[in-house]
Length: 232
Length: 232
DNA sequence: GCCGCAAGAAATATCTATATTATGCGATAG
DNA sequence: CTATCGCATAATATAGATATTTCTTGCGGC
Image (cartoon, rainbow over all chains, first blue to last red; front, top):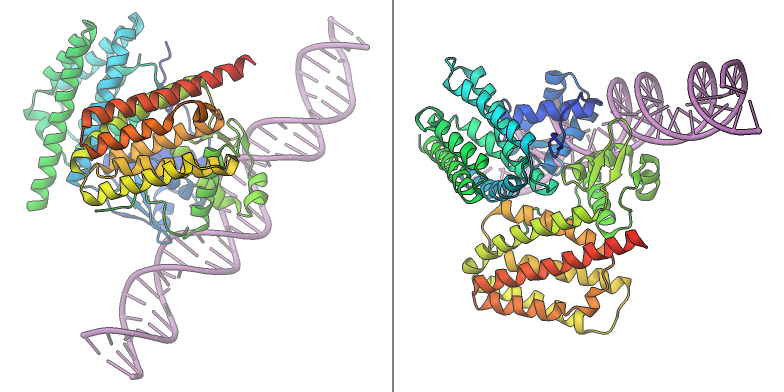
């Protein structure tokens, strides 16, 4: 079984533009670069110590991913942040991830099962563990991503996986930016366990039902958080 | 009602990079630049009379759209062309376009209806008209695109429309590259009329059934054409 | 003679530095 | 108060320098 992701972002960055792309993407998704913020070349040059050429290429690529906007003759912008977008992204992720999961489960072999179990346990360990800092949250995102990716890994459609991955990243950005405290109150751990069980039972209907609910809950929390922020 | 598309590609290209992006995209989708072909800077420089900087930015952006591939330190490539990809793209387009249509129809107002009717008639006129050359085919693509876009135009989700548009473009590339003659044998015109009727009747179920069949037929024709080409 | 390998040369991609051009803002005149 | 001019800032494009890959050729070894 192929274990690499659809858009293999693994391995070392061979070019400066590639490095710029990864750094920028991470900083945008993590929220280090704020939504709507102007991405001035000079500022980025000093921040990453990378020339304007590679930076512009990286931002162009990110524009293709819709993480950056191009403004005619007036530079680049971090993609904005609205409740409407959060809702749309969540709904689209729900649709594609449920479909990908539906295709993945019946095709998952024993290697797939092992990967699902492994990533689940790593996530579980972190969730039930002690530390709760900014760092831990970042680590949780990494493990959460790994688990969700493992679940759909057996889906044969590269395009579906790509789209899912893109939506997942956007959804992650919204999650991190709205700093949803629901991570603590809501029992995400149980949701993940239900997902695991349904997947291993090869119960597609159940798995899809759970994933839809899981994504919907997150979306609702995010939308609520944004609207509260706006009213504050 | 907003009549612009999700990714407004209308209006004049304000920068050279933007112009390069549009020219390249058109040439890739139309097939003027063959799948898998190496996109050498020097070659493109003379072809479009545009410097390497803007060209590289345009290709980076197209890489984000998956119309171009980036090869480590070895340049850019037109996205490859496989039966597997055609199938995946068709399936994904089927899913997102049906969903977009389902959201658009109930929300379509009279302006929407008029646009649907207008674009249909333009398409009908061209389909039943005389000329059948390379130029006419290109014009048909334009009108076909306009009609399909009009149908989903009332869908409120920008993200869904974006994804639909992306899939439509990829699907179009496959259609054009495999030069499906089915355009003539299959009765696409009738399919379009059914689509029109269902949309105006606000019959979502029917419209979705028709659009799925419509897209599936095209996909099958394309996949068949590719496999025949491979065996020839 | 033929194959594999390695060194050098050519081609090409990538990056940097510089020049050009557009935009936004503030001052000033109407 | 509005409109226009000019300057400062910043984006964009070009041209040239650098680094990498790819191709070619020549030299043993088989």
